Amino acid sequence: MSWSELYLGPGTWILAVLGGGLLGMDAVSWPQVMVSRPLVSATLGGWLLGNPVAGMLVGGVLEVYALRHPPFGAAKYPDTGPAGLVAGASFAASGGVAMGAFLLSVAIGWGLGWIGTVTVQVRRRLNERIMSPAGELAADPALLEQRHRVAIWLDGLRGAILVAAFLVPSVLVVTLVVGTGPSTLGRYAVASLVLGLAGSAGAAGRSSAFGVRGWPLLLVGAGLGLLLVVGGLT
Amino acid sequence: MRPLRSDHLTAWSRTFAVQGSWNYTTMVGTGIAYAVLPLLRRIYAGDPVRLREAVERAMGPFNGHPYLCAMAVAALGRLEQDEVDPQTIERFRTALRGPLGTVGDRAVWGQWRPICVLIATLSFLLGASPGWSVAIFLALYNVGHIAVRVWAYAAGWQAGLDVGRLLKGAWLERWAEKIWPLNILLTGAVALVLADVVVEQSAVSLAPAALLGMGLVGALLTFRFPRQGGRLATVLLVIAPLLWVLGGLVG
Image (cartoon, rainbow over all chains, first blue to last red; front, side):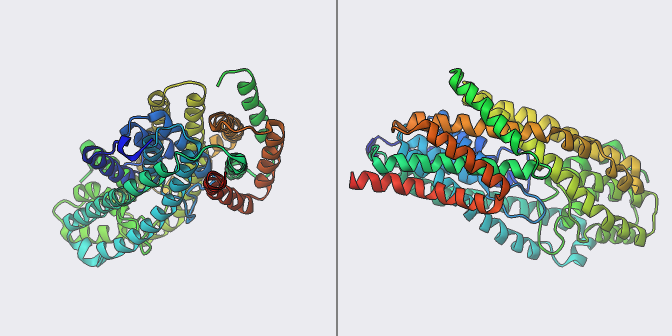
């Protein structure tokens, strides 16, 4: 695929940026219906670029990685809404077939997720200023409501900026590697992702288990997955 | 004055935005004040001084699982209506923080969300369209999500000061302890099927038995050592495209 075949017009870009705003808000601020999960956001990105299947494939891998970062207490976790959208859109824009583009899209999604985490922390610091002084806000509840809503909109703006800043560069970079075909090293690249997936699944399983006693279940689950694959159900 | 049904509805709907102004000083405190405000306005109608004091109390530092914060919002409203003294309200808030976070994190973030997302991913890998898979996830997850918020708000208003006791043996906690095996089973199944799809799509020749063996050993090791294993998994994710591109360049 050449760059001239790529379609990412202004209309699509604007829709993606608006979507990024909504996805940016959803994870924490409002309404937490989980459209910000990578499975959804990457599919949305793929759909915007005409290939939702490609987007969902990227989202599925990102999801297994994200599952090992549950937001327990003060734990840090990737902001997968805007990141998933950019990753899914990038792979879809590349045609949704080339393995190099797939691997790069997933890595970009993961990296952007952690950049998003930094912006979330910056926003939380900003919220300290927005929601003070406490006495003034308590004396004027309407002002409290207004400031709270401003904080929510700022979260949306944060998500929109992430998509606006990273969508086009990501699509271009991913499109660059479309031409690279399988090679000896390419085998190791795919094996690397597969082993990474297995490792993430192990860590994700542990984060949901009550203690270390769940490991046989992980094997049984993998066995069931193997049956599905061997049985030709996938 | 007692809050009206419409006040409760507004307060409940505002719990969806309870983390909107999350910050490192009060955490979710300002969001709690935002959500409980419709109740306080009714309870202290015509008394701006007491309203101000109540809002100030509500804005104090607080944290908890966002869905279960609906319980805190309703319970705090109930305490204000029952004219419970401010010191007791403060102690109540402090006591509620831990259980609200722990129960919600374990049940919702730890079990319900992963299970829903894994079911949706598996349905996609088994042939469902992306649209259906997304719809399955959002519908399934949000049925549970909304149910928890409704239960939490209703229980908080009814129980008032007794909310802590209610949380100790909460059905959510018991449910999380029962459902986690399904979560791990699904994780194993999804990871394996997804890996197969990736290998199929790659068009490179790999030794499947060796890869499967290494994957299983890797998964078990990261289960035992999740922090170190998780970091290694991230490194593998990052070097994968680099290896691919490098292979393309050197042939």
